[in-house]
Length: 371
Image (cartoon, rainbow, N blue to C red; front, top):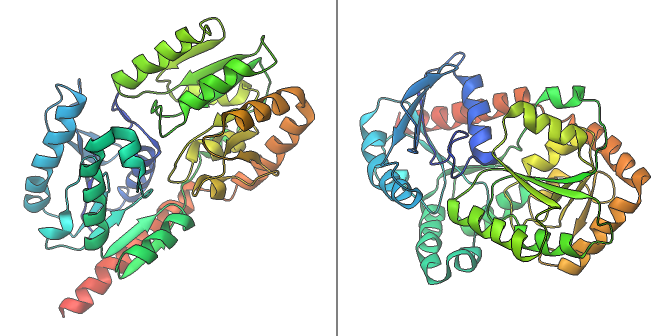
């Protein structure tokens, strides 16, 4: 089976590099052991077409800026989807760089939908949010075969689409995380895309400025758009937290694992998420998670067993929960131990196999219909 996968995001992309990109990498590397896989990603500075671990990567668009990269990816990717040889097309749906493959691709199309934005698009971009909002509605109307990483998103799709087949397959975690020996150093960790609104980083900085413990540090790791990084650093400076909050930028695999291993706990105050792969990775490393009780993330971890989940947008509750975990080492340890047990079910090997079988089922059913 020849697979052609379109996704703007990429683990090497300095502007994005989120959980969806990491899942794409893991699944496609697994499938490429026996099947030809080509991935179309957005272009970015320093990017080049290459083959990595059997996966052929083609960078689409102009890399001169994040906005231009997004726009040109959207404009150019249809030409690749129509011209490249494949048996099935996979589209990671980005409503900020939509390609609407179902309109013009004659091969079966699987849409991977990590989350539904709804009104969040307007909160992110004011009146400009109308464009991703319309794109989302069109995507959902056109989708015939959809794959999600959370049961909550699957239920939402079943309520608003006429897709023939919707499958929920969660994300996975690296088995190497279970080999880490947990240690506690005096810092709280945030690890993820630097997106102030989606990830709730504005809430985190405000809450951290209010906690009782003035000795503990907050380390923030991840890449993002330049504008968000500037806003983050400005917020840290305005709150007078330069000596207590450290922005690390993008970290490699070894640095990421060491941060998980040595943090007190992971904090993830997101306003919306697809699933929350970072939370499960922290659990796999034996660490507690402080997150928000939102669709997706509430499936990735369990409140009062592997994590503490609070109301989204609630700075007061976030502050109190930070204080609670900082004051109770035994609680952190128990959440981390139970989290490690919970996370063992999320094996990349089984998840990759399930996703490949979903592709096979879609292709087989379409071939039967043609006959």
